[in-house]
Length: 574
Image (cartoon, rainbow, N blue to C red):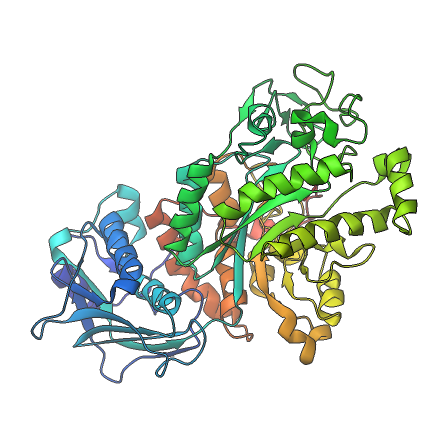
């Protein structure tokens, strides 16, 4: 990768940073792209070093601490919080609604007097810090590869600049499925940091699945004793070429969940938990078979898959797909789910609780005498109406607790719950239909936002298939033409989804995430206009940041071999 760097700039870099390999000083490279960036007529730089103070109210301490921690981790020195005295340049962080009128917007000014960040809110000030971080010089690739770090006593230089910026959408989300493969607390925190560094503000935590129940529920200990572990996992693409015969899994204690929620809150990120219902319930049913319409039947496994261990009774699934054993809509099940939610709600202050609602086969409901009688008693049209009854009953319960539900677009089937927000994944049609019925929607169509899809036509590692190149993610506009005008107000934003059937490590997760998450961050923050060439120019520096973070990233965007037949999507589920 050739860096745009003049001999004059090299001289300045050597003079300022002495023993350090020179930093890349290409054009300003901020993601997501700010609304307005102005460079002064007279160029200049400000040095930030260990003597620099951050001046901020106590309410903005998180922003200052995040910046200092970032400097310590990647540049070898930190800065202190304190009250500015004298004329020495400082980093001043404030909230000023009269100066910054857009919700969660900010202004950032760097001049000889220091760094001046003013937010419309504490969150806005935090976003200003993220832009400041991206103005820090990035070591060149050779220095990063060698492991050489900047000399802490030299400090770093940032350019004089003026930025006026604010988000296009209020909901800017990233999702992580920890049901198919479990990720540790440090890994989840790292994922949250990536969300923060991209000015995104929702972490959708997919906590329950057919292959694992991941959150402690004290009233139902078998959910984690039994449901959090599976006896093996298929090898290769569904239906697999074998089974690894390895017991795997894990779960988060309620105390650990509180730790994650607090960690995210310090970064102005709301954690939205997902408890799947009525489908994707195999792990819960393995723990408590009475939640099934047919509790005495053995768990069915897909034809052609290799199973590890016991095949009798209810089992946590070892393969990927959609399974017929779903929650029975009985009073026992509703009592169970309400108990679960009663323990979930105190852990998550989020307004929204995601209840899934997707990919619920109706086979067992069709052959269940109980379900057929319930359909008649409730005057429902069919099994789709029964799913709507199920979702509406849960929604009513959550509404009574002051919360609102989000569900995948299948919750439209049989009639939409009155106050539900729809997360549209099967294209945009579900979101369009919901918005036209005056429901709020979050766009996450698989064709633009499923980051588990292949990003190259010649992937060198296993993916679920599909094909979602970087340029297509970058091109996404969350407001489809069909919602132009009044219905547009119901589009809260968009979200990137990372399903983990074929993602078992943090390195693979990062490879699937970057640089597509960076592109998606612009879709939810920056103005709707697109400039692919400009994005690519800025991406050069961003790849160095990934390297600085120690994160793996796909370079498929630079690989001409990516042209060819798209890989087929395999074993795909929500």
